[in-house]
Every structure is written in structure tokens, then in C-alpha cells.
Image (cartoon, rainbow, N blue to C red; front, top):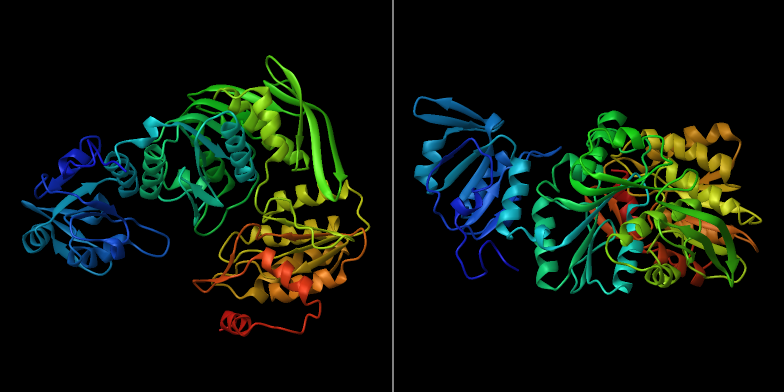
Length: 537
């Protein structure tokens, strides 16, 4: 992995500052920088520590810990600095101290920047020698479908001979191994580090999911995408710690269209015109209902040997050809069209598209886990009203005897989605099992109360079982021949987050466990009991 210039060269602070807009530097600019950190616990001798302000913590409050750990330089926000005669005062909620005193005591350099998040992105890019400029970069944004589209496009590109890295909700693929993902769009430092690893591992392309939070928090600042893709948008991620309003959410999504060379957008989404306001890219479209650069015809969904499949005819600018997928649903046709549109700019042929899509699968996205010959069990990540509605409507088209859905809602996230998801399930499912998702710091029973407010007025049948393990056992015990059972909300996730702790919990394992032990009351794990006890404290 290369830092600026070469892996052998010392990295000096003044090299990092060449392309950074900052207000002032105090202390030596020739200090060697061994790494960049934004968490004080990661600081080592020679690190550059960037003070970031988050929802619950302010990096400025952890400055002393970073200095004690050996930071060679720090980046602080201008709003935390008050000019004095021949000096300045750095202050936080916890302390105020003259900058000259910090420099004298710790022999450290201090960079004052208007926006430390922007500074982190620019500094990280410089530190890793601008790896994005050495890759073909594809960014994908949208309320739903980012992960599926990323997997489909990556599959097509690999089929066409491109070594492709990927950054997204499920995993980070640097071309030499796969890492589990923590955020859809990681912090700027991690993004640049992963991109540098891709370059070192011989990748020529990176496909990245770009969340609205990633755009808002400037995590992709300094990256110019060859292709930016807009899939769709619906009111979501609105609330404390996310977006203040739908208008802000939409604006953050739209930034990608001012940060790419080619924009590929969904012509059928009613908000596309607003997404394109002020765009600086050339624009291409995909659609199911309007003339566009890429469209689909003769769409068909069917079941074969217990698998849910889809097929359609792609009509592009220069060719018409058939495609078959293991991902059913109109929303997945949209995802495929977006991927096909991007792949065409990256050298993929119609044959590459057909072969890749025929075998492509996405973990936890409408994934059929066949544990019974009598009924279908699907695991899906649907965790908002839009995705749950699309999923259940699609499955209705297969005419199951009963459509059973199990889901919950995440804690410390938008409360608007809870009653809406309950209402959606009540209208579209024959039977609903309300359970816990990732309650985080909220009481799971209170989250279920909010969901129940939505489902109660629909007349739909439902039960609530807060313990997800017990809920899955119950659901599988209820399922009968020709039913479809959907476990929604968790998808690929292998944990359940409760009061700051991520406990191991996988839908796949819960299904297998329930299959082996159909009696719900047996084999209750002791850790499971402790986990739910902690949840109510």
C-alpha cells in the first residue's frame, strides 16, 4: 500500500497539506506523519489526529489522549479556536488552552481547518497517493437496491475480465480477500485505505455504494466517479442522527450527480429531475415505462425447482438480448438495468451480461434458503416501508397459499418507518410476526408498540414475539405446504445490536436451528436469555 510518493519515502506534514485548504498551521510543517487517525484510541507515535464532531462525541474532547499517545500533528476545527494577540485559544466543552502551550508541551503541529471532515477526506487521499485516480470508480446511490446493483455490476465486470473491488453494505472486497462491512459507506480514511489496497492488488475498477450519510459526512469528498448511478428515493433515514428532512436527504443524494463524469439515472423515479438539478455530468437513463437508453421488455417471474426466477429482454442503444436472473421482482429488474447501463461504459458485452446475471446472487437479498420441500423461506434485508412493500407485492405475484412475514425495526433510527412498515405488512401479508431487529439503545417492546400502531388498523392478523430466535421458531412452526415465509430486515447481518454490543445472531443459523428443533421451548441458549435481560435494563 503506497503513501504519497512511494512506500519508502517519509511522509511529511507539508506534503499532506499541499492540496488541503486550511486556515492556519502552528508548529513545524516538516514533521514525519506515520498514519492518520480520527479515533484517539488508534493514535500511535507520529500519527496525525483529526478531530471530528459526531452525534454523540466530539474528537476535540479526546485531544489530550491523542497527544499522550504520541500524535505528531492534530487538525482542529476553526470554530473551536478563538484568536488572541499573537496566539489562539483552543476550547471544547471540557477545557480551554492556548495553542502555544500545547505546542510547547507536546512538540506537536496544529492545523486549523474550516471543516475537519473535509480535511480528513483530503488528507487521507493524499496519504494514500490518490488511489481513486488509478481506478475506474463507480458510485451507486438510492434508498434501496444499492447492494444488489453493486453485486450485479461487479459480477458483470468480473465476467468481462476486470478485476473489480467493491465497498458496500455487506462487505469490502479489495481484490485479495473480503472484509465484513460496518457502514454502507465507510469513513474517508478507510475508503482511501481500501482503494489503495485495491490498486496494490491489481484491481482496475471499484464499485462503491454511496449512502446519503456518506455524502453528507463528506466521506467520498475528493473522489471523482467515472460513473454515478441514481436508483430511487423515498422518504427514509429522516430523524435524529440521519437527515433533518426529506429535502436534505434528497439534496445529499443529488451530490453524486455533481461528482461524476456520467450519471445513470432511473427515469421512472418521480424525484429524478430534482436529483439532477445542478448536475455537472452527462446523463443516461434506464426505465421500464418510458423511452430510455436501457429498457426491459417481456418481463416474467416464475418458480422453477423451488427457485424464484426472473427473465426479460434488454433493449439497449445498439442491441436487444434476453437475460435471466435468480433475483425476481420489478425492483430487481431496475437494479439490473442500472448495472447493465454502467457495464456498457466499462467494456462489458451482451454475453458478459447474460452469463453474469444468470448466476449472480446477493447475500440476504430475496435469498431462498430451502429448508423444506413444502414451503419457501426467504431472507431479505427489507428494512423500510418502500423495500418491504416492493418485496411483499412481488411475492404476492407467485400466489402462495399464505404469505407470512417476520420483521422488526431498528432502534435509534427514523421512527416514521415503524408504523408505515406495520401498515404495509398488515395490508399485504396474510400473517405477520413482529419481532426485534437491532434495538440498539431503545426498548424493543416500545419499538414493537410503534409498529403495532400501524398494523392494528389494517385488520391483518399478527402476533408479537420480541425474541427473534423464538419468533423464527414460531414462524417455521406455523408455515404449511405452499406457504411463503419471509424473514425481513436483517438479511446478511450476522449480529444483533443491543446497547452498544453486537451479539452473534444470523438468520441462516436461526432457520437451521429451528429446523432441527421445531419445539420452540427447547434448547434456549443461555446467552440469549442474558441478552434479552440486558435489553430491558
